[in-house]
Amino acid sequence: MRATGSSGFESIPLVDQSGRTVRLADFRGKVVVLAPFFTLGADDVPLTTGVFELLQRWLSGAGLAGQVVLAEVSVDPQEDDPAMLAAYARRVGSSWYLLSGKARALRALWKDFGVSYQVITETVPEEGNWLDGQPLTRDVNYTEGVFVLDRRGHKRFTAIGRPDPGGVLPPALASMLDEDGLDDLDSPSGPTWTPAGVLDDVSKLIGQGRKLG
Image (cartoon, rainbow, N blue to C red; front, top):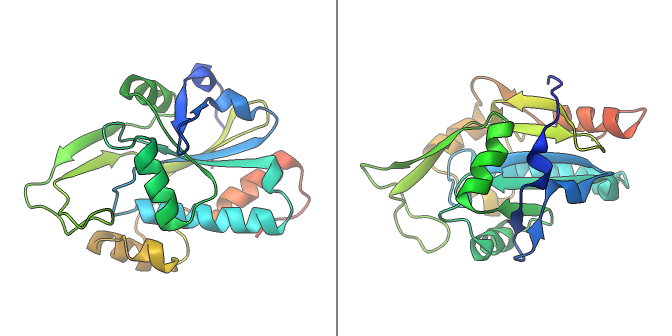
C-alpha cells in the first residue's frame, strides 16, 4: 500500500443503511477503512464484504472495534438507497457502515480517491440476483480497491486491486457469487488486497506494536 494525501471529501454528505446522513468528517479521531461496492454486485463485491467481515471480527477480538470505522461505499446511486443497503446488511449480517448518496455526491467522493465507475447493460442477462431472483440486466464496472484514513481524516494507504478473503466466504456471501466471482475466490488474479494487509496498515495508524489478525 502507498501513502496518499488529504482533500475535501470529508464534508460530502452520504447516507447509511438506516437513512441517516453521514460524512466522513464524523469519524475524525478514528481510523477509517473504506472500499467501493454495490449491493447487486455478484462478482467481487461479496469478496469485499467477506474481507470486511474478517476485519470486523479481528478488530472486535482485539478490542479495537471502537477505534476503527469500516465502511463499504456505493458506486451505484441509482439502486443503492437506504432500503437496499439495509436489505444487503440483513442478507450478509454486516455490522459496519454501508453508505450511498446522491449521484453527484458519490461521483465527487470517489473522484478524490481515484475511483471511476460506469453502469453497463448486460446483453445477455446474468443469473438471478439475491434480492428477488430476477436476472441481472445491468452491472457496474468500477475501480476496485481499499483505502485507509488516519485519525485526522487524511488518506494514508491505498491498495488498488481485487479483494482476497483467503478462499473462504460465509455461506450467505458465497451464495451471491456468479461464476467469475467463484473463480476469483478460488484463484484471485492480478493485484489483490487482503485483510492481513489492511490490518497491518491499521496497526501502524493506531500505534499497535504487533500485527492484528
